[in-house]
Length: 312
Image 1 (tube, helix red, strand yellow):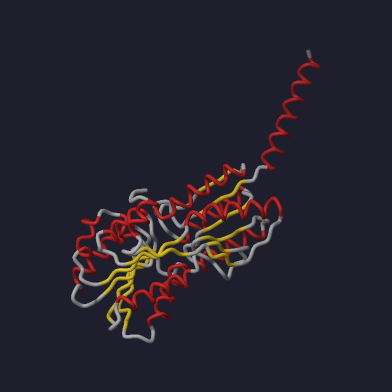
Image 2 (cartoon, one colour):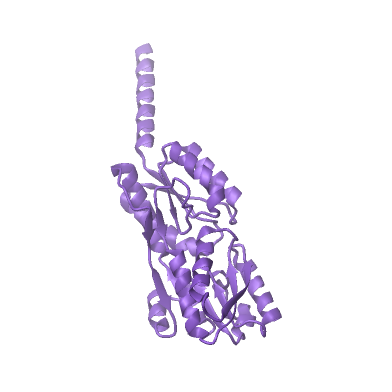
């Protein structure tokens, strides 16, 4: 009887050891968007999930509910404690996240950025839009829409977010030698309802004082068109970043002139695959990897709707 008990204990210990070895060998990749309540990351999450299943890795999709740099730091600290295999981050604030990114790297956890970068950190690579080039493209388009110049208001998300600041910088650079003037930059805090409120309020109060909107993210265009009634009746021009399905009706109905889109599917799936190869094969990648842009306007809106639909 005593021998049987000892044998049972030994078998249990061996099972625990096997379980620990399996856990240690398991590749766990964490993707951290700016916030869980921002629907622009839905495409990235779904593409990342498919790629993780294809590669046989565990995917952790985690973030704070709202876009907040301090809370994002806490999320990364938690992932370091959990000793995940690798982390991909859409950075809320490049400066605020720099130290915790470096801390993860020092702990032996490969870190990359996607969508929004922290270029001065020790992250291995960035995968996403060339945001400066995207903003510059929007400025070039605006020059065509306002050939005689005009006043432009910009809606951004969180002030200081590297990707959004780069879009604004690119836009301003494109229009700097023209009669186009950026008169105001307003923040919607990466929040749909807040963005709708900001845009509606500003448009109603200033509709005769400016000539165009540039949304450097698509937040206010995720709601039904009638919710954005002041913009619907705005006589000026509107350009927005992003080409998500709900936004396409705004172009179809002539409320928005041009959408400049990002490839969020590539950001999600590509980050998972690249980090997986770094962990398993010690692969190396360029520091900057451009996921590309797409332009949607009246000339291709029907084709785009046929391809993407108008709902998530």
